[in-house]
Length: 151
Image 1 (cartoon, rainbow, N blue to C red):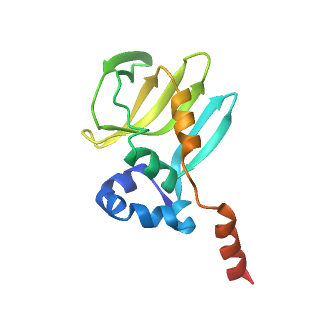
Image 2: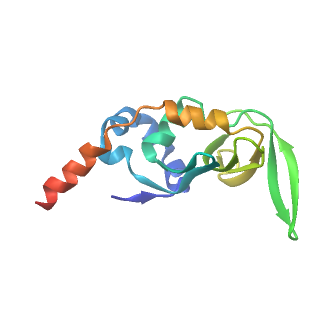
């Protein structure tokens, strides 16, 4: 199985839009690994995100950051925050935080800047709930296919 980077996905974004449904239906494609795509939330642990997960969440606009958020910048080792708000530009693919403390940070792909940027999120529980609500193909189908090939 190949591993993709976030920049790989966005450099071929139209391909993923056109083939979205077939990717969701094929466990081998759905469970393509994505570098640095995960979330870790205190009290829920860490979850790895796969291509199918991200496509569902992005195309349903559940993991697009359209609300006001804080851009995290690091200038001369001094962390600064700048408020930003963009529509249909910030695609969430990694976040770490706590459902209680509010100290949450994330990595998003910016369509307008064509790069990964770091932001602070006020609330992450809704993103966790959106993730839990998606349908995934049975992983056992994928394992069985690889098992049959090995035999």
